[in-house]
Length: 424
Image 1 (cartoon, rainbow, N blue to C red):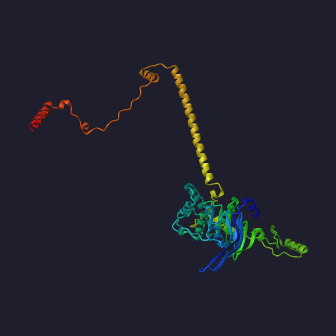
Image 2 (image 1 turned 90 degrees about the vertical axis):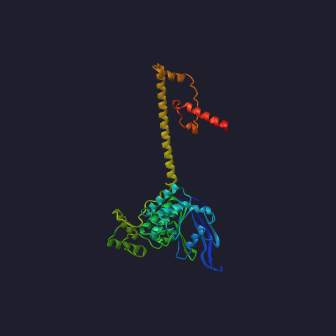
Image 3 (image 1 turned 45 degrees about the vertical axis):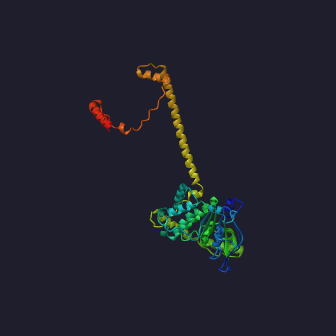
């Protein structure tokens, strides 16, 4: 693991650099109460999976909160991405799974991830794609519309891991990520951590499950009383220098006796223990569940998740969107080229046909003469049609025909009216 870590480290600036880091909690009268972190020197390189170990009260959670800028240090120096942890600009590059996930109980899994995606100002299409991939990865697709308050602790841990990855962080901090998870979920989280480390992400893993840390990390630091007691790779810290193991196929008792006598002659010692290797309980559990899933047995909880989300492996989001856009542009350009070619062919055929027809054209009727007139002479300019005005009340009334009008009656009425006006 150490060699792969060295190959992944490409940046000279460490992701986390702490020097003499100290945090002292004080009581109401500002007297020193607890020295949670005491002169801690720590450095996490870019692209490294780093384990932070220690018993309860050793200062692990306090150190993580100092890195996140949630607590102010009492003394020493601390930088994250070369900047002060309180710098808001680095928050977008972080992904955090706290020891206790504080989620809104009335939201379902999809709404929860969509909410955190909006906090990072992710585009709607990117949020939809990432939510689908993450829910499939953590095995919550079948229960994505159930409210968080109905989830078990392990299921809430799974959705917490998904929300920590929604922004595709450069530095991922996982505090007890496998708490409450079944062995299947624990194995999946370990595989995910290893996969993200190979991609080049920096991961800080803090856990009491020492076997999980041992399987994943490149380097580790063990704290006690706020101080660093040991630091190094797994091989440096865990390799037993005074013993050696030789693994072979099954041997009979006579062969073992001969080997024992040979060891006594050469070293003066003897074989300490002869045993057959056992399968790990975790491997047995995983095999049993895999067989049950092959029989299509139903479960009411979270299912075994799918593959790692594509955007976490660098094959989703931007790459997919770019590929879709390029494919759409190619289709449009192909269609335009085809239409242009068809138009040129049609125009060429029409021009050829017109030239051939004009060479042997003879007027055969009035239609041909009208066409010749329109082609050879300047057409009369088209005058705009007069705008129709709204008819008045009088004009809107139907006018009587002349045969229906009695002119003598009209004259008599006009004459009587004239006489009355003269008298007045």
